Length: 195
Image (cartoon, rainbow, N blue to C red; front, side, top):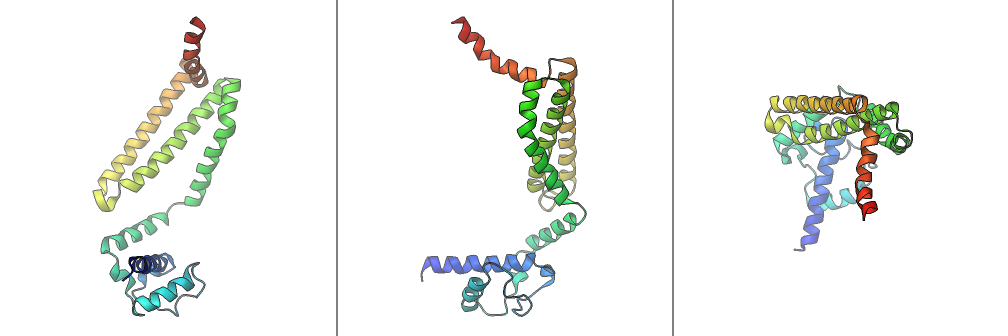
């Protein structure tokens, strides 16, 4: 038996299982009914059907092949995502990321408190969202229970607030954020001039 052929059949089975879960009502479907889904449901639909039809019987129990914990975690993720507006959050993340292209040069050129504050808020917000995504991905309630993820998010919020407070103190009571960056760049120049 050719290993490449067996591996490709298994890959297509997994793709079919995932496609069935993603479709509306997919979590409630217990068997693959070929008339239930349109033929153009997937970009791999025709190739998928031809390989799977030869490799398995037509009544495949999709959810019974998946572990119960995976099925529950998918359901929990879908239920949790119904409460938030993730498209708006994604758009805000992209806007903040794109704003760095103009904000960093402007803060370095103008060197005033207004741009320092905008830069500090953007940096802390961008970092908070990134670390929050990591915490949500790796500190799952299914694995560590319901209490640990709440503590992790709370600690992240405290860390972000403390970071923003420290940067604001640096801006108002110190030389400023961009001035410190420029002073850091100038450290090596003093040694070169002395030699």
